[in-house]
Image (tube, rainbow over all chains, first blue to last red; front, side):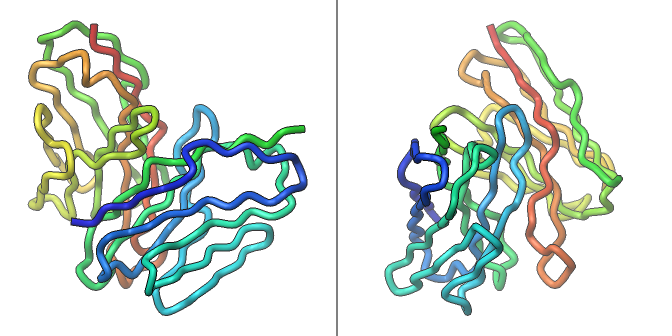
Length: 113
Length: 116
């Protein structure tokens, strides 16, 4: 089955700097890669996703890149702000198999003042 | 607003007790899931159900059972709770591929379970 590895487990960046979180997946048939954000004490929520027919997707300060050959994808947050402090989860799924989503273990992002 | 709710929100119990966690949704979604969250281990899938008559095991189903009572209700049971089942439990819903917001997981607020 699919296995998703996520790094780093903890990341601290100065406010205003960029943050990058990286994930790798094992199943080359996976074609859908969402990212979820979980603020302290809250439920996880989808922030951005990408399908395998696209190499990059942006939404304001966040972007996700996908390298299908290397089977890895990354979340980029630019101009970080205090409200970006949270746990971020990457995930992978195969839409064609109508399959469940497998999550990575999460990255705790701290934005330092 | 359509939502996913969980009861109870917090529960402390003793080893060997039977516990049921309940999940209800008003989103009209067919698919429902139970996840367990432990520090450093992410979100691990326990069971999932793609419709009322469909129940599937996830990554870590041992020690758990589920019941899909209706489209809107999906319950998780711990038949004989043990301390290593202490965790934060999330219910989630989604729509199938081809629908709006396909595959997006809509999570409930979570149930914090402590087994002493």
